[in-house]
Amino acid sequence: MGSLGALLFLLGSLGALADVCEIPHVDSQLVERMGQHLLPWMNQISQEQLNPSIYVGLRLSSVQAGDMEAFYLHSLKLKYQQNILGCTSSDDCKTKPPMGQLALYMLALRANCEFARGHKGDRLVSQLKRFLEDEKKAIGHNHKDYPYVSYYQYGLSILALCVHQKRVHDSVVKKLLYAVEHDQHFYQGTLSVDTEAMAGLAFACLERSNLNPNLRNRITLAIRTAIGKILKTQTSEGHFGHVYSSPLALQFLMTSPMRDMELGTACLKAGAALLAILKDRGFQNVLMISTLLPVLNHKSYVDLISPDCQAPRAAPSSLLGTVVLEPAMEIPSQTQSSDVIRVTLKVPSVLPPYRHVIFVPAGSSLEDVLKKAQELWGFTYGTKATLSGPYLTSVMGKEAGEREFWQLLRAPDTRLLQGIAEYTPKDGETIELRLVSW
Image 1: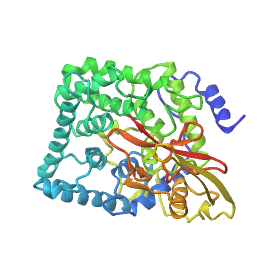
Image 2: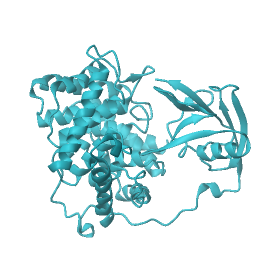
Image 3: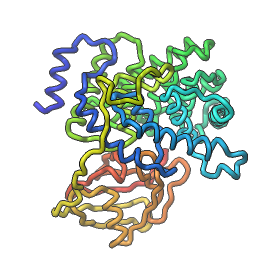
Image 4: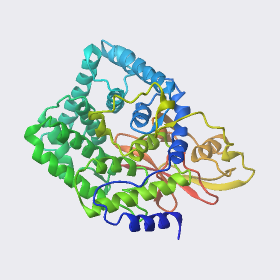
């Protein structure tokens, strides 16, 4: 029996009667090991690298980074308040980030027990409300169209305003309710668990805060609907949708006061699956880690309604039950291996189709494969920096258009859940880059 199977057997023996969403206890050393991955990112203070999710994840977890937290929040404020909220015209705001990042920044403020107040706070709130109004218009009166950006950022923006006790108009909330009620979070026949979970977190906040009392009954029903749909996505391994969507799904499910045997069992199974990966050092993605850390501390973004403002954050060494991060010893990269592997790279979405065999050191990332193909075999590609790492935008001169993206697959037809900087091909694999629409 494998480690996951053994853990599930133990959970079945000890928690067979669980009827609320909880996960097993997590060893603090595992949490510390995962938190160590955030330290290099906290040392990145360039405008492009700053990530509010890191700060939120740390504040909702038992992991603390001491003075680095305060410095990181200061850097966030410089970026979002001075460079973004301080602009007076569209010409001054050319580097303004997406609304989803502004919403995350609002979560970071609440994680530090601050409300969006004053001139700059009011401007931030106004920007998010204006964004939601624009997205509402894009969806249309008959709900036949889609948001300009995404339903994920739509739900995130409602959540961010909610934890600051800022009410949005009922008509804005109704668009998100309709999307959950009418299965509009499905893409290519598959539920977007992240999008559904974010909508659920927004609804859970609205329900607790009672900011839209006329919609209370409909919000409660939508929460139950979202829970039911997410439970149906659980895989045999225990993940909701896939491993990268499970943390946000668990955050949402843990907000539910429902007492249901199926819910409790599903959460235990999902928690066991994540713990098995933790033991194997399987998490590298910074957004994944920052979303998972609150779950391991039995918290969610909804807890930012009333964050723990009494915790003595300035003196982390005096806290009991917390983990204080310190820089870890550098571990030699896997790419230093002397073994060489063979990876076939193919791109059928361009003319003429591209196909070539690339030889790289064992342990190389897919991004290393692309760089080697670019260096030796006439391959070209473009990326943009995102909070999840480099995002593929063009291949062989072909740009992804509106509602298109470059999908990463392992032949014959297995979608990769990791990005180009994270996925490590194995010897003999064929990797396909396919331009798809959504």
